[in-house]
Length: 255
Image (cartoon, rainbow, N blue to C red; front, side):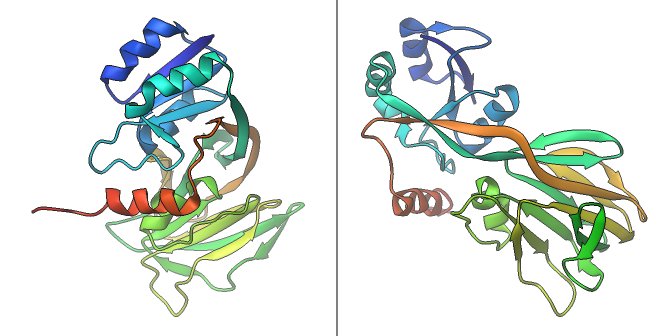
């Protein structure tokens, strides 16, 4: 089997993978070794199925991982015996701004942490913009995610964890006004955000796209690019186990 490896650093288990498989720039699957950030990086670099092996380092949860580096021999055995399946999580986000396209795994974010940014949010119904929220929103910005990214920045910002595919969540960042709750809408449509007053920085998965000035807008929709993961036979974690690991990764034991 030929594989691609993306790793946060040179973990000891990587050598075992290199010994057992044909490692190259492409492969049947991509093995990401690290945490959620490594998973996102792998998804940007590779369009095929990804197996995330978490590193178990402090502060790293590896939400989409069912195995750790402690299981490396078991992982190798199951891959060589083809005891795994490929599962589609969701489609990547397609962000459009100023005639260019960007593809996100976790989220698109408009924010201005130095000053309030004012914006309107719409659904694009075949070119007709319908209000999602009837008034101009104000605050630090807005985060747009699908189910994939709901456990990332969205969760930290107070947004819900989404278990169902094909929905968008709009989570408002420190909203200044009477309405602060996240809004969930069907992802079959396109979300449009127009900046009304004060500029905001548009980012995806932590990477800057541009500064969006008043009068300009960007859109977010589901792309045609699937995000697929490798599930090893007999090694699938329950939702509660994943949540426990996420919570524990954020807990401080000693100061």
